[in-house]
Image (cartoon, rainbow, N blue to C red):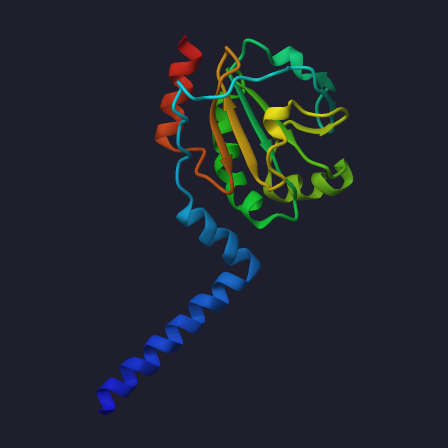
Length: 185
């Protein structure tokens, strides 16, 4: 009886510690990274195509652009915010992907925050991702959700191959292989 009681107490104690770690912000982000999976590729037969490339973007740490400049390129778009735990959880994985593909893929990170909010977060974490604010409405394909993070991987023809809401492992072998294939086409 005493052995059963101590197993139950130990089990409850471990459960309470796990819940506490999940509620503590730094470990919550670490935990989200551990359970993030590589995003799934859409069935290309049913995949959406961008309805427009007309979207003005104000560069916060890069030049301002119109999204049309990225037409006929492989594009990775991420809607995010510094206050969003799932956004912060996936950011280290995205930075690693960006480090290796920034010269081959157009990366577009869109936030509603200003540079005075983003810069300290980037400085603290040593991020150098290209960040923009929307100056005009994004293509309708990106307005179907208000949740963040929301990420999209688009091929050179404007086909949305991945549409993912929530944290994901963007630095996975699966995503890298897909990018390599898309770049070579």
